[in-house]
Image 1: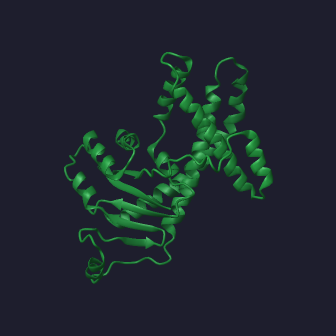
Image 2: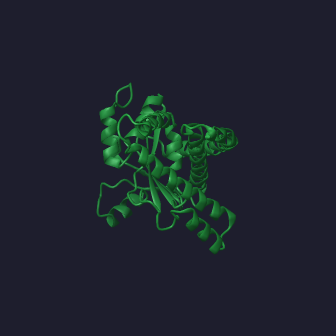
Image 3: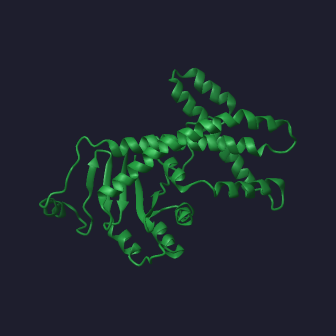
Length: 274
């Protein structure tokens, strides 16, 4: 599966990295992930899979349960305890860095990436920054993952209290989130570093490709590797053209998100970090 990554400056030297929303990726893998503990044990014991595959299945099972519990909190009546917990959870989620959300979006199903960026940016710089965010992610989220796992036994002690154990479930979520971000970092680094056959555009390529393309205005793709393609976008460049020295305003960000199927909340986080 190819994922489209959109990269553009949001203010000065601060860039936004986001993945276009894939409607098929948003579907729940209910046909693969068991919904009960009995089904999980049956699937693990009946199939001869390596340990890492069983661990992946266990994480997906826990993630599915967490998502269902979160939806239940979201639908709780106003003023109820569950509704207050949901509001508190939203405040905690707002503190999650957008780079972590971006890395988590690079799932194990992604086999190649198409990087969309404004042609005003140097493609080598775009590739370098993508590589940097992937390399730093492998270091950062591995450290945070170890720290979150260490906190799990400590926060589980609050189970004896009659109130919901919010610290435990938050640390459990952060453990899962850092693990996914670590996997995404490693996957992205592998996809953009596989440069066994880098291709440099030649002057004659423009003429040859224009004959084969139905859309003559389509920008030329530059393949850095078999799994990474850089695609300059004139549409993105035009949307960014009226940006002021203060960076993109919210209205411009909304237009970009609509045009490239980006999550507005995640993109706005980049602007708020500036």
